[in-house]
Image (tube, rainbow, N blue to C red):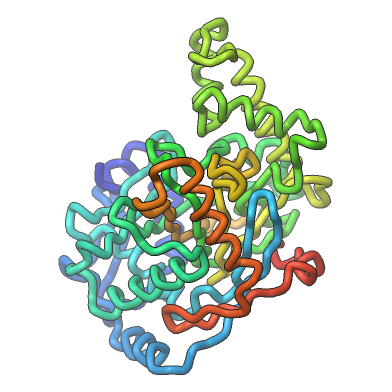
Length: 404
């Protein structure tokens, strides 16, 4: 359903209106082309397709003609395999994508912005196979971004994957003096990227389009949390066991067992666990995520949004091709004092295993192993106007601050 209709029915209209009020001076539309958020959605005189300023088109064209800029990729974690790339997108590329989202109310119906079910989060899908409504500069930018994603994951685009997607998470109010971190992960929950009926996803590239700088007195949350980073079953950790229990029960989102337990806690999942047991496992994961959101967590990792930064992580193991229980993750709710804060914008791509590797778990494992091998042995790879250089794993520990 259209973004405007959803916003009119919930609290999202306030958050998106504040975003547009903040973003209006930065919006790359031709002079005189106003854009606003109304009860009927995003409105403006920009026409059926987004009309970007010639300045942005020229800057993007100049960037295409330049020699490849260098971007360093830093491995942060081996389980799940997590890599951070600052500068994956340039500032002008981020601004261009923010403008695409802000003008989403003028897109054709098949590309209109929509609300995620049961949330105030909105998204716009940018399908390269049906992007004729976009200006040529925007189409070329999306193609370059997809080429970069294929390079850093060593996995080509497939016909089965979902398109690139811009997501908007509105900010929430924050009382001056801070917030109880134990509430941060509860709204959106945690998930594995095989959810929503997409079992062949093997990696995810999450790119932040604006800064979210944490300040205990003004801004808390907004990062992407991996509560099981650094945790293993060998440690006998109860959180890891909870993650495996949910996987065994075929559960890929913490919200499902909590809803089921509220309805019938004695029911069984079809596996050896009762609904009450899976709900308890989900609560353990959420508690671990909220702990990871604290200032000095002993376990877990949070990647904080920085404009142009990409978080690249793998959701399957190279050892057996199975889903990695350590890849449970989620977005921390963003709380701010200043209600004019623009919220958080991200661009994401779910990467799927190529068709020829889907015949067996052994074949899946072979593809994942090849994808990960590049991450640790390839000195550099060039794609989409960027030369990616891999930072040695030994040096990565000293660069952990890149995630905060």
